[in-house]
Amino acid sequence: MSATVSSSARAFAPAEPGGYAERNLRYWRRNLVVCVFGSFTTLVSLSMLLPFLPLYVRQLGVASQPAVIQWSGIAFGATFLGTALTAPLWGRLADRFGRKPMLVRAAIGMAVVMSLIGMAHNVYELVALRLVAGLVGGYASASAVMVGTQAPRERAGWALGMLSTGALAGNLVGPLVGGVLPGWIGIRGTFFAGGAMIALAALLTIFVVKEAFHPASDAKAHARGAAAANVRRPDYAVVAALLVTAMMVLLANMSIEPVITVYIGSLGVGAADLARVAGVVMACSALGSMLTAARLGALADRFGSWRVIVACLVLTGLAMVPQAFVTHWWQLAALRMLMGMTLAGLLPSIGKLARQSVDESRTGSMLGYLQSAQFSGQVAGPVIGGVIGVHFGLHAVFFATGALLAACGGLAHWAQRRVRA
Image (cartoon, rainbow, N blue to C red; front, side):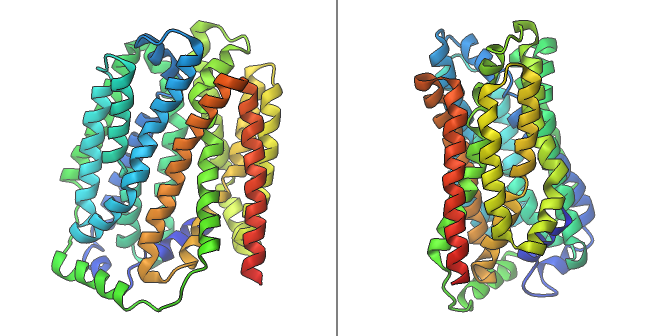
C-alpha cells in the first residue's frame, strides 16, 4: 500500500510551503487517529447491514422473493447515489470553510440517520433514509482530504496508508458484525448500535480534531492556484475511460452483495446460520483486497498503471464466472477473496492516472469526479444485480458482471494505446 498512498500523498500535498500544512503540523497525528477510527466506524455501520438487508426488507412488509431482491438492491444503492451526487460539493465546501466542519457534518448526519433507519416503518422510508445517509455522509472522503493536506510531505504516504487500512478494516468487519449482532439485539437494535458508534466518532471529531484554517488566506490561495494553472488540457477521452473503469470496480464488487444472502440460502445454508455465513462471505472480498493492495501498487509503479488496470480487469472478470457454479458457501467465499485480490490493484492505479491527467490546481475537482464515479458504480451494481437476478436468475448476475469487466478491460487497453500514441 505504500506505493499507492505515496501517489495519494503527492496529490493532496499543499502547493504552497508554509501555508495550511505548516499551521496544522502539530495537529496531524491526533487528527489521523480520530480519522482512522471515524472511517472505520462509519464503514462498519454502512456495510454491516449487507447480511441482513433482505431480512429487514421482508420484515418491513415485502413478501415475495423477487420483490425482496429488487428492494434490497434499491435500498443499498440509495446511499451511494446520494454520495455520488454530493461528493464534489463537499470537496468545494472543504476548500472554502475547512476540513473539520465537513468531518463534523458527516459524522453527526450519519449518526442521526443510521439510528432513524432502525425506526423505519416500511420499505419506502428505508430507501429514503438510506438516500439521506449518502447525501450527508462522506466521512472517509473528508478524512482523506484532511490527513493528506495536514501530514508532512515525508509522512503523508504512511498517514494515508493508515487511513486506507482503517477504511478497509471497516468494510471487512462490517459484514461480520452484521452477521452476528442481529442475533443478539435484533435488526433494529443493530442500527441503533451503528448510530452510537458513529456518534462516538462525531464526539471525538468535535473535541479532539484540531484545525488551523484561515478562510481569507486558504480559500484565496486555492482560487489563485486554480486561476494560475497551466493551460494544459487533459485528454478527455482518457479521463472518461478512467471514470468508467472506476465505476466498474465498485459495480463488480456490489452487483451481487445486496442479494448474496438469498444466493447463499439457495446453497443449502439454514435460516439460523444464514446471516452469519453471509457476513463471512462478504468480508472475504475486503480481506483479499487488504492482502494484495500494497503489492499491486508496487507493480503499478514498476510496470505502469495501465498494464495493472487491464490485467486486473480481465482477471476479475474471470474470477466472477465460476461464482455462478458453486455448490457450497465456502467455495463462494474463496472465489470472493480471489476477486478482492484482483480488484485491489484497480482503484490505486486509476487514482494515480487521474491525478496525473490534470494540473495540480485541479486535482481536487478531479478526485471529486472520481469519487462520484466510484459511488455511481455502487449505485448501479445493486440495481443491475437486482434486476438481472429477478428476470434471469442470480447465476446470470455473475455472467453479466464478468462480461462488463471484460469490455471495460478492452476500453482500458484502448486508452493505454491512445496515451502511448
